[in-house]
Image (cartoon, rainbow, N blue to C red; front, side):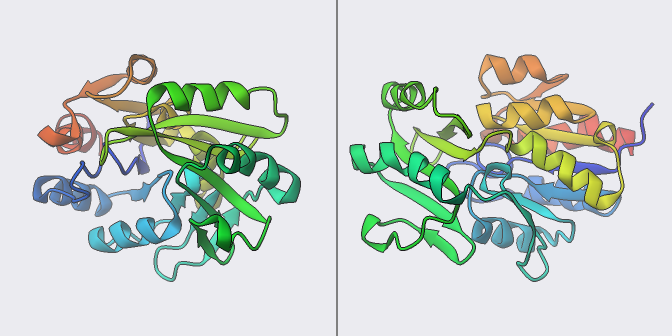
Length: 249
């Protein structure tokens, strides 16, 4: 049996539900794991959200934001590692957002941009088109499928039941960030457990030694996991920890 030394958790739809709160049962379960092994949040959100929820749980291990493009120290918010897009790829990623006029956020070393009138840098880390219906999200991904150097992934937004499309540098995703995290902390990917619910969680579930999918996850994500647990509204993460994780530690 492998020695598991880290738990990597998606945020939306896994750790928090549509109300953007961590339930008491889930919080207690995560804190119990964190007393035994490292715990990291891995989310498509920006660093501020990671710091907020990491602080609530008392997490001290490096945390992953920006869909794998940034790893931060939760104790001070400093970047430990990043994979910025650079100007050329930043312009490519912003093009469908500028053309469609959709809501978005773009992260960079100095913060987050959510308004085109404030787009004062092209040195971006990650770009997200927000609040799209399924057809629009699929069409945006298709329109960008031939753009070399960029990866795109469709992400379910449980708080409004719409979709986002995340753009990162090619090869940068939650799975690649998990590998970087392992190098930082001196463990192997086979010694990690990953839990998630959306398409952008599949790479880390496939990379981890043990993958667990939430019950509301798309079939492709559930197929990549060893176990499936109930959805976030039923405290599925707590059940995953109680039934599948704590017995291994």
